[in-house]
Length: 250
Image (cartoon, rainbow, N blue to C red; front, side, top):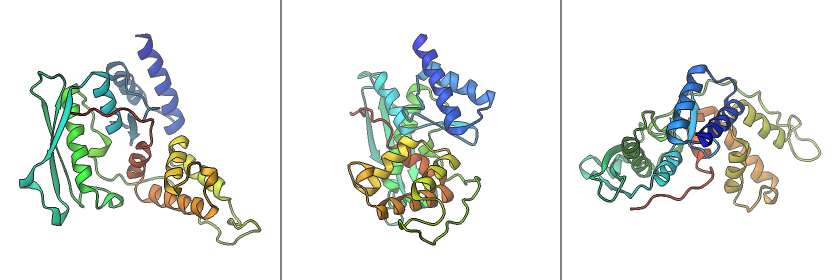
């Protein structure tokens, strides 16, 4: 009971820091998700989009691990797959115990129901969606997973145009790159640690300090474009850099 209380307190604090005001209904839902499943926002288990909670693939795998899930099997449903059209359907079965008959879930993906930013990865998206649905059935998760939904339009304010004039250090005459990055994080309510992890991966360096100015500028520009065009897909990408958890294997 104490662990659940502490987890909820941490969740509510982080939620307010990331998304600002949280409605009483959303807080009640967060309390139930914390108490029932011990899902953690800090670990990337939950996202709040348009006032509604969504569980993540990371959160579902963590839940399965904590409950000693016996395994997950997946395979494509060939009758509903068309590789030339990048249309894929997968079936996943989650086994809570070795004697369990399994909980089945299906997931489909094609260019029409995934973000343009992940076009070409429809097969992996379909498999992830199938696994998510199987795990949600197995553990009674009533909320949708963020990987199952399509794009969500971003209604945030647009950034002011960046001044292209340069000063002595080669950065824009307006805000410096670092300042613009901080502005993006605040405007779009992004997790700074996940953004940093993504930046390191994007730049291909061990630390952000080792990245060149051009690499960082390119990253900030991509982050800005992604946040403007498809914030939901960006959140999914950032969530993939959350604290890793051991995956359940068959």
